[in-house]
Image (tube, rainbow, N blue to C red; front, side, top):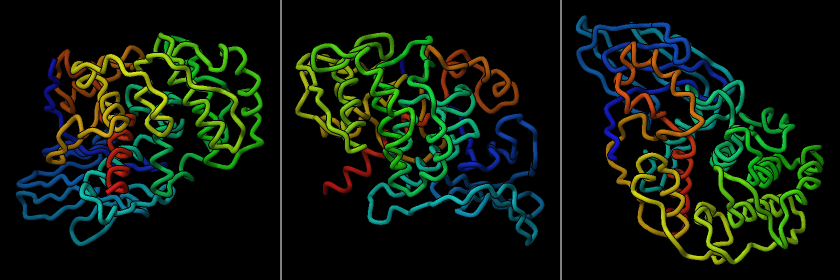
Length: 354
């Protein structure tokens, strides 16, 4: 299967700001309730995700710009500037010196617009709740850009050992992800840390942990996350990564790369549906990007046919022309933050290693 990217729109509303959506042809909508806020009779338009803006010329000769910066979300027209949403200020580094600076800025925006009042989510439309795995990868990016304050309240408010978003399962990798996220705020005395430490024996097998992640046992991946979380907090870790094949081992590129047993790689279908898997794998093996980074046509990232995504929510988006009304599109979420995070972190590390 080859996913055909026909939708184009730009999301605004980084961090705590109101979520807005620009639809080509001159419509600015509320991204959640789809209320039309502004519309223009467009002659020309330029959607520029790397500069967080849309520039329009109308048939009546008006010049319009919708833009987002560190201080807010703005509408400029008729010589005036109107604030559309302010919220908490954000930091927007330019990534000067990186070959893919424009891509990094646009990916950073896709991460920031998916921070909701309920926390950092994989996609603001089909995932109403945060997932610890995706959130941990998002926070890894926010640490690089100085935006952890945007998710501090959510992180310090965590009180469950696992998110139980995946068919209600208690996923073993969540333990390490919790520890890592709390370490970013130096929260060594957070009550959930003690609960994680007490829960580890429930997953322990010999000198590692094992359990379910995405419905299967992934002891290498799960133990890597646990060790990483413990070490991020400065705790001793007696656990050893098992010497067994684990298809998810290569998803953890942040360390322990030598503790890996080679085996079957992710398929081309996985690349189309779950591209974050292939990006993480390429990062782990120090390989070329699994996708070409060409023209910046937002949304840049995706996930398809995920078992727990609430795709029924997309029907109203198709009804107003935001996405094509097709079975294919109604099973994809665009953008997707794990995909955005994996590309972002790959490009950051590759630039640093030059």
